[in-house]
Structures are given as structure tokens and as C-alpha cells.
Length: 178
Image (tube, rainbow, N blue to C red):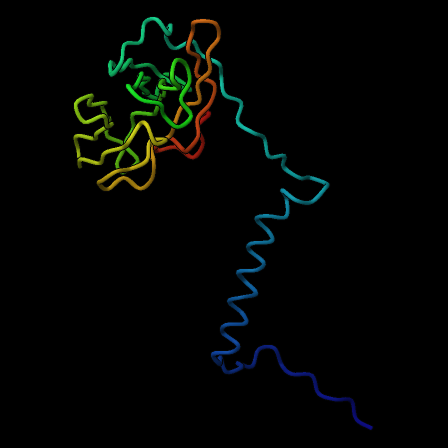
């Protein structure tokens, strides 16, 4: 009995829609596994580290007047931020009446510097007028910002307001800790 012929790999096989989708799915699956596997598997795995934010003294509680923003930088010198004592309690606020909050001042739309406007009780970007509510976790109220402003986590240490972290990604960064 003669041996069965093996197909010649150099002869073109017609590319059907089913075959095209199969090749695409296999390629995509392989790419995903190759990207994820080093972080999941044992030997040679890359460890995923939680960002370690510095603890920074921002301002004394007594130095914060209602609706009078105080500028500072956090988590590094190239990250402008603002702390403000609102007239009402705020989400994740600290201090008297939970009214002290802080945010990155880089707009989530194009990175322009937002400023607190006490008459509107909003952080407003002068470039495209995106407006963010500091009492509601920096939620965007109107405009072209893509998400809420990154909120700076605060705590009280005696009478000192300290920055301890950031929730959300600061505009223009892949990670908040450089």
C-alpha cells in the first residue's frame, strides 16, 4: 500500500473568511497570552508593585480659609495640585465637616491648568471650559474632559493636612509615580 501524500506547504491554500478569522483569533489570543503570561506565571514573572506614594505636608488646617485654594505639587514637583476647604461636606473630604479636598490641576481633556472658582464652586479649565465638581470627587460637570480630575488622598496629622496618594491617573502619564 503506498504512503499517503503529505500536502506541500508551499502551495497556496485559498483564504476563506473562516480561515482568515481563525488566523486572526489565534494571533490575538497568542498576543494576549504572551503579554499576560509573564505577570501570571512563576519563573521569570514580573512582579506588579503597588505605587508607593510619598506622604507630603501640604498646609496647616488653620491656614485653610473657606473657598480659598492653596496650590502645591504632588506626588512630585511636576504635578500641580490644589487643596481647598469647601463650604459643604465633600466626597472623601477630611477635616472639619469633611470639607477639605485636593485635586490634580491638570485637566483630563488636554492637560491645561484648571483653577478653583469659588463663585461657581467648580474647578474650571480655561482652555475648553471643562468644569469639575470638587464636592463630588472631581466629577466632570460639563465640557470635554474625559473623566473626573484625579483626587489627591488626604489625611490629618495633628493640625497638618498631608497628601498620601492619588486616585485616578494624572494627565499625560502612564503612572503617577515617575
